Length: 117
Image (tube, rainbow, N blue to C red; front, side, top):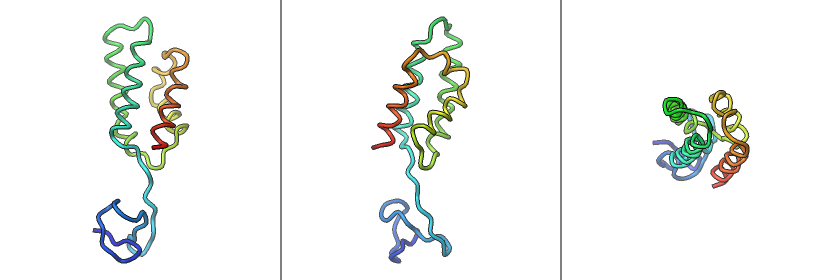
């Protein structure tokens, strides 16, 4: 149990966003929900079908790399669309250049929509 600023005991994350931790105040940051992270990763996996000249083993390896991004993506605090997109490009450098034109822009629109909710 944590104590909120008014002194009431509340469960984590249900009521006010400011809590006391040993005489200091910290703000809780927004994070992506698990269903939003799954939607983003599913979009990337669906894009693999659009990549020309890839065999089954290459597609399976790419899907595996995409699925490994779940943990860090769900743990980001106060993410922005640009930050997430840049980090995904850094973590998947061999995959993003293979996507056809327009996938990056649609991913950015999806990220903006998910972070706005």
